[in-house]
Length: 326
Ligand code: F6P
Image (cartoon, rainbow, N blue to C red; front, side, top):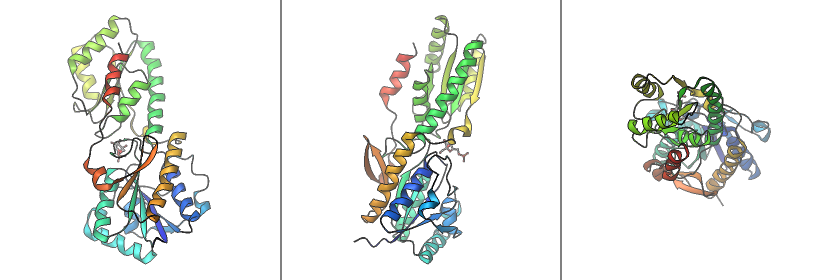
């Protein structure tokens, strides 16, 4: 029999569509298993400020379809200090909370790993970020929705690019990873994709663009990951525009639109599976692990490994972008 009787749940870092579905799954799984469940507001900051309330089944009614997070999110500087974490631990003890489920990205798991070790406190993580940059899971919650948001936007830009025979550089989020840029590039038929994982080869880019226009392509779209080592879409567009005044160049930065919106069915199902598994893992006395999906199966990865290793881009997908844009 597990000693865990009560679980807290929080969302931290950049919000991602599907976080609500994960919260709902955690709450319902706790109630199903006769555990008390508490929602912590504004991530780790809410733990420090004792902004915590008990959740019931109907607290999470009608939220599976909503973007954002009902628990709100924050990036807490205070939790980076030992004093902040001491306050957080004291509040958890006062409330009688035995374990935490934290939903977020690598910053969230870094905080969880330190706090878990410092106070010998059981924590299980659920990957929630549009960046999909976490080792130990094929997909993070929010990535699929963001991908579809980007593709929908690029399709619209393609219409106007074609009308004016223009070259567009479209910048997408992803922090220092290129997952969002690579897949959205493939799905939208982009002429080229620029990601931080691969050095930008300007000669090759020019060759692609020239080739396309020589073949009477009426528009060109280049997807640029915000973390690309050149420094983003504006810089790249500037350089290409100066060297090729014959191109009519435009830039679109998609920005935070990528973080919002109703989660896709895929994200809702993944979030539900991971939320349920997180509660089961805690009941099984596991700690300091991240729940993930590998080959459509639930897997567990220790925080240490998830944080130490870098998830690689699929080289076959990278190669595909070159073949398919000829
Ligand atoms: O990690 C998610 C993310 O949206 C990144 O893609 C982006 O670099 C960052 O968060 C933006 O953070 P903020 O919302 O704090 O500006």
